[in-house]
Length: 470
Image 1 (cartoon, rainbow, N blue to C red):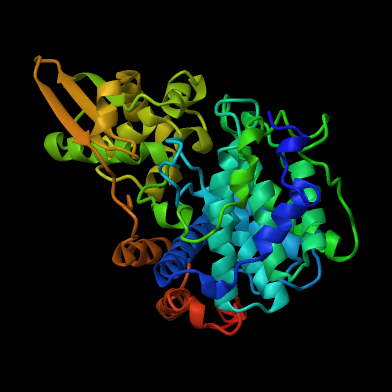
Image 2: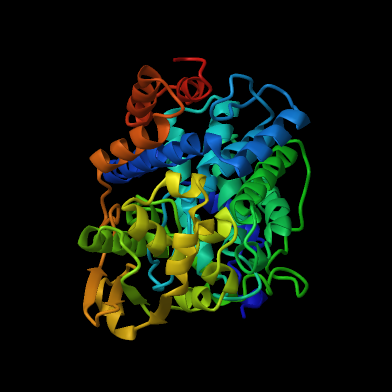
């Protein structure tokens, strides 16, 4: 654990970090990284639009309407604006509710890198509030991705705290840059944000609830509020990492703290992001693909199946999932989209894995429950080499006659090897947005996101998202 001697000279670490986070110019980032950020922006907005019909998201939208607030920022699909922190909460929930926003397959540490796109809701609200340009917003998103990935490495894997805690680092930087805070104000915003960001790992285990989707929006909302407070003179505790009663239990790897001060260019986390084709956890994308492959072989017939073995890579995250009873026997939407057994069964039985399988609560269907009961999960270290940096899967079906069928998926649709597929993102956007928006509005949103760097103000995009510029 780092002591005071390990903290860079020139004030507390949080002050040094604030100066570092404000230093890059939006023009410092290469065109490839900016293009990647535009694609990630469109992909995340697609997830947000697609969630407009989700019950859990509707509850948050109702809450935001009830709270009210100054008409500052746009909520996706809402003509009436609301206060900036409330907009972050609402849009953050929409972007997360379907579990279809992007993910980072593996950081340099080899660990799953989480969902830095969770904080794009902060960039949109802060840019709209301040009148920032599209290029400014994209630069803040890129820097937010980098900070998210680096802060993730400071946390203990499998510990008491959930990974959304790292948004307490990333979200205030995104908001602070766009709200034009100075270094002292940003240091206070970071301190206020991080002091409240620690989130229990229980939001993602046991009886999985809507807290799974709400966890990051609540951290992001707090970060936006912290920036506004700091802008008006509120202060936070500066020795957030030096003091003996500070953040050591949340970020135990303080010896790596100075990695947060590495240059932001060339960006790595932004370029490593992949998109999801299926509404489920990142490690389940190959499981869905395997279920679909097996459906093509057997037509979804299940009576002849004796047993199914799903072998996954041997990683900490997957080992933890295998022993979580709520995932093995899902009873809620939140548990189902994190259940490998349900994902495979639904894809196999229906020959599709999308929002429809959740809308009809397929996890409660007798055929699905019967197939889920036949599925066993194992971690196989030999599979790890099949897809370095990914989450490979092998599904083996044994029939009652003794025959076997194997479907092996190395990388799922949407997996990126350093460059996202624009056509795939446009198809996903149209698929998710079509039930909610007319074609002209969809096309204008997509075109605006893909030229976001040219926008003199992000407000042009926000008017479209609120239905005011269609």
